[in-house]
Length: 143
Image (tube, rainbow, N blue to C red; front, side, top):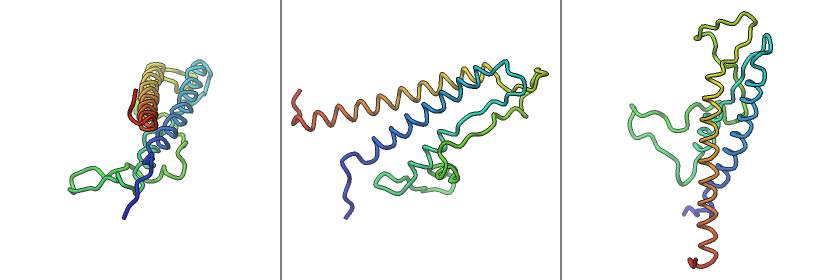
């Protein structure tokens, strides 16, 4: 018989998401700050892959692949051991007009920053709702 925990990993996963999103925010700001630095290479953090690998662990909410045409749950498996793995932003597919070797694309960085902010806000809202429900349970469903 499987016993569910009080939090079912939601708070732990949201906490990890907030930590990783905060680190990614700092990294993106660093890229923006170095937009004029010659030979600076832009970096990004693989947050989504790390969270997908973390959430694919076995548990009561584990996803199962019911058809061979479905995508596997949890994404790639190599990120689980190093959730803060960095990667160079792929500039080989882009045409860079800069002659100083800098790979920062301000449009991409600002877009990634806005997306990261939305994900961070969603994680804080999930945590807030979870704590509101817990407070309601503790108070016996009153007020």
